[in-house]
Length: 511
Ligand SMILES: Nc1ncnc2c1ncn2[C@@H]1O[C@H](COP(=O)(O)OP(=O)(O)O)[C@@H](O)[C@H]1O
Ligand SMILES: [Mg+2]
Image (cartoon, rainbow, N blue to C red; front, side, top):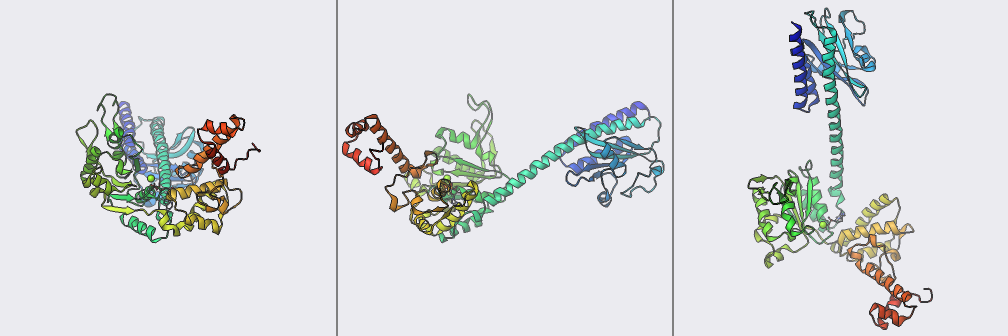
């Protein structure tokens, strides 16, 4: 073969290998293709790729042309063992002109019947100065027109392609493993054992969740705020077959009305002035996953039609587009309103109501399942004790008070209350007097003020009272402790002012 022809073949082999490495992300398949190309283009036979296993620190055959599976499984080497091991250790290529004469040649795979006249090339696969593997090929020199150097040059180019690919592939695998781990954490977090309650009311909910989780049925979650609608929606997703894709939540009450359509369905580029980029809507984001439409009662009437169509036909048009997008999305909707009342009032379309109402699940308010409170207390004490490194327990009397309270904010309020206690408590046992006064009839009048940052809606009363107390004190100070003037400054009568002094236990003399 003349030298020019040989060079041409080398180039096309290099080109083919580089193309092959981008056609798929399958390590073994790609390595095998690369070795086959060396065989067909450059008479390099029995190509083998060895990679160092980062965990076991042993060399493992990843791909081998003309080796059976059994032979492949036999081919593991210690670093420094045999020629392959030596090349890995030194990072330098090795060449054996006639493998029959070389004692270092271990022939572990047992695949060479006759060793006569076969030369052996072994080239390191290195990246960043680190050798991560080895390529070996056999070569029977029939012509005199190529040199060992030529062959090594080609092999080292191929080896550097392989090195790049392996690094990419390993990063990809690591990321994939990470994602897998996170996914199983989510699956555990949003599982039935984490929906707390043994009451018949809650057990009824769990039964429905088990029944519908693995189906694609639309589910409508009904219940007051804080009863666990979103928790159930997430559980439905993470216990379904859709967990590989996303759980996307949209709170329709939180979006300005004129943005809801774009948010849900997306915008085609150029749909209106300013639409310079195509925008993906939440429906598309949830492709093959679950879309949680929270506060569905807030959906404007004109969009109710569009949603109905998506639910029926699984397709819609982006704003400014005429072609339809097909989606495979499981829809879970939630509301704390009485949707049927809204239908009667004409605020909610009846056809959409029935379409959403295929499987309604009613989340019971906490006050009708107060028997679950000891369990919930255990669960949240445990959780927050861990989070804040504390060992707070609750006295039996305090637990009774928690059971008696009506919990207008439901489990959300309950969880917040326990969290606050775990953070604020000085001792390790929650006693009745430690409870917020809205819970405890005995200390209704005590000026217990909690920090504003921890306050939520349910503690609005406390917060307002805290502000009021501060204002009363400031007015007194600003007016030289003259009650009449201070009351005037606040715009209330002296009698009202006196009442507030008593209510907040403000001691004149101490100020
Ligand atoms: N049965 C339950 N067991 C444990 N935690 C719950 C339960 N129900 C609700 N929660 C918790 O209460 C909080 C409020 O629940 P969420 O699902 O957001 O309520 P909603 O969507 O109905 O307002 C969340 O932190 C949730 O994890
Ligand atoms: Mg909610």
